[in-house]
Length: 93
Image 1 (cartoon, rainbow, N blue to C red):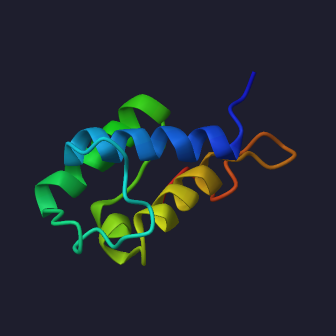
Image 2: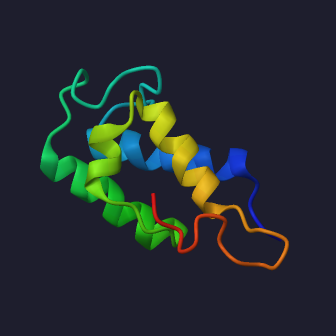
């Protein structure tokens, strides 16, 4: 059974919370506003790749308006088209 976009976004949020060492990911906040560092962005992307099988670049964490936007991008990258291919052509966020 393939995970829904909502489930993938939730897993991405869980990863963010663990890396930032907070009880819940502040999805309405910008990564920099919550004190995020470049090393943490790299760790988030590495965990997204390892745990969810989705390639994400640290720049996508930095460039997202909010952490929720990053999670939505991860979820969108996980979705398959009708032919079973990644919607974004390679699961890259």
